[in-house]
Length: 255
Length: 255
Image 1: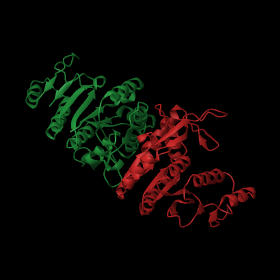
Image 2 (image 1 turned 60 degrees about the horizontal axis):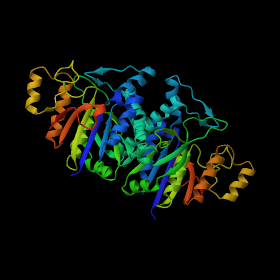
Image 3 (image 1 turned 90 degrees about the vertical axis):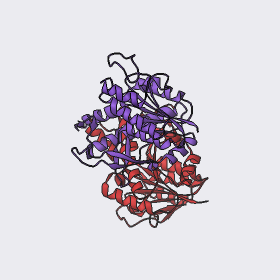
Image 4 (image 1 turned 180 degrees about the vertical axis):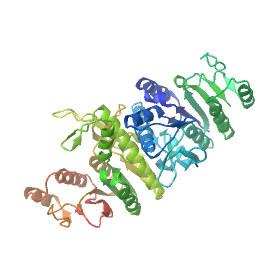
C-alpha cells in the first residue's frame, strides 16, 4: 500500500501569518498523498468577542450554542480553511477544503446532553474513507476543518484531534497511514521544564507506567489514548511532534 | 450531451431560513447534474456591522479591503456555503462547497486599480470545466461561493453572477447547459410596476430595441449582457426568473 500522511495542526500555527507560511512550505515538502486537519479556536474566540459573544469552555471544550455555531462555521469553514487552501494552491498543491458535510465525508451525532450541554457539537459516527481515498488518488489534498454534519441539515463543531484520528483510521484500509499531531512542544516530554527531554518511543505498557509515575499527565493523556486507539484500528504509526518538524524526524513515535 | 442546470441564487434567498428551505426542496427536484452558485452580501454587511466594519459599495460592488476580505471569506465560504451544503445533504444531494481556490476550480486576476480601488476583488481568468465535469459525473453537486483565488495565496471576492456565467460557459463543452439567474422578480418585466408583465423570450435584436425604448434599464442591462455572452460561448439557454420557479416554467428565456 502507498504511504499516506495525515497531519493535524492546532489553531496557533494556522492563525499566525509567519508560522502559516512555514507550515505551507513544510507541508508541501512531504512526499506522497497527504491530508491536513486544522483547528482555529483562537480566531473563533477572537471573532466571537468582536461580535460581543462570550466564549464558554468546559474541560477545554467549547460550548457551541446557535450563535457560536455560526462563529465556528465562519472561522473554521471559511476564514482558516480557505486561507490554507489558497496558500497551498500557491505552492502547487491541489488542495480542497472540506467540512464533514462536503461530499458527506464525516457524519456525526450531536453529542447527547448528560451533565453538560455542549450544544452543536458532533461525535464522529462515520468517515467516508473511500471518497477521501479517491480524492487522494486523483492527487487532491483534503484540508479538513473541525466541522461535521448530522445528515439532518446541521453543521456540528467537532474536535480537530478526533477528526484527524478518525480520518486516519478510515484511510488505514487504503494506505499505510502515518498520523502526525503537531503541538507546541517537540514531543511527549519526560520533564515538562526541559523542552529537549522528548521521549522517542512509547508503547502501551510504557504509557501506563509513565501515567502511573505522573510523568505523563493532563491533556497529553487523552492525546495518547487517541493515538493508541488509532494504532489498534490499523494506523501504522502516530507521531506527536512540533509543527516545525512535520517530517517526523523528531518527536514521539507511537506504534 | 447530458443536460446540466447551473443555478445562481442571490443573497436574500439563501439568508432567510424559510426561503432557504424552499430552495433546498426546489433545487433537489431538478433532475440531472446541477450546480448551485450563491451570494451572501446581506449577511456579509450584517457581520461587518457587528464587528464595527463599515461596508462601502461603489456601483453596487463591494469595496473589499483586507478586513472586508476576511468578512466575505467567513460569510460566503463558511456560513452561507456550509449551511447550504448541509441542507442539501439532508435532502440526499451529495453537495460539495467550493470556492475558486478549492481544487483550483476558478482562477482570477485581482482587479486592476483604475478610477476605483475595489481591493481584493477578482476578475475570473479561468474555470476548470474538466474538474467540475468529473465531479458532476460522479454525482457530486458543486455549491459555489462567490470567492476565487489568484494562485498566489490570496482569496478574491468575486461577483456571483460572473461565477455562474463563467462556470456555465466552461461546462458548455461537456453538457447542454441551462443557466438560471434567480432574482426577486418573475423575469424581465415589460412594466416594472406590473409583476406579471414578464417578457417570455428575448433575442439580441429585441434586447437592443427594449433598451433603446427604455423598457429594460439599470441592473438588468448587465444581467442580460452576461446572458447573451453565455449564449455566444455555447450555453444553450439562459433563464431569468424568480427563486420559486427554478424549473424554468416561467421567467424570461434567452436563447
